[in-house]
Amino acid sequence: MRLLEHEQPGLQVLGDSAYGTGDARAALAEAGHQALIKPLPLRLAVPGGYTLDDFTVDEPAGAVTCRAGVTRPINKFWDVVFGAACRDCTLRATCTTVAKGKTVRLHKHDPLLHGARRQADGAGFQAVYRQHRAIVERSIAWLTCGNRKLRYRGVAKQRRVAAPPDRDAQPAPAPRPRPHPTKRVWVLA
Image 1 (tube, rainbow, N blue to C red):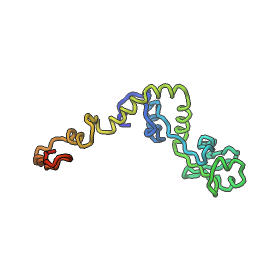
Image 2: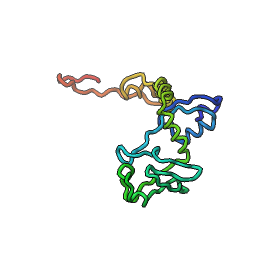
Image 3: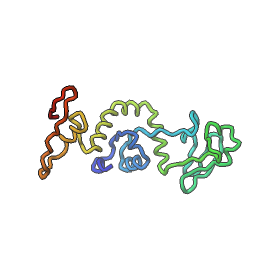
Image 4: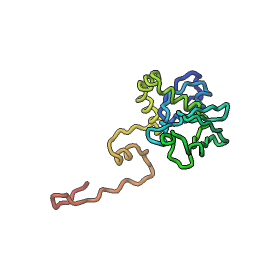
């Protein structure tokens, strides 16, 4: 976010999913920028089952409702424990495998994250993101890796070329002679 602190509000900020946290999105929104950041995919508790987006979160009321219509309160840790309500639920097989029932863990910026997932499903987001994805990822890599470009193949050669010269260092030792693989003669490598 330090890169944007001197920019005017109203920028479209593109980034990959590593920059799609709730805190980052909140900071961009607070600064008046539009985040076009690919959201992290939701993990499924059961393959082909429900995700967090399948639950109805009512933040003002402090409650979450599942697909079966069961409503539970959000606790002070932003968790929602459905527990015993899951025992006889007909949707349990598509919701959870945990014996104690489903627990939904919310984030303090859950509405922003939910909105980002909805935004990413839209055609407008997909068009802009696909158009600029390569440029964005290359720019991020360039900025986060110390503005370096590898100009040579091979780690050893790159380290020799990229390393700043050490004026006080002793010269490298002379190469040691070794036998030629096919001839019984010694050659310098």
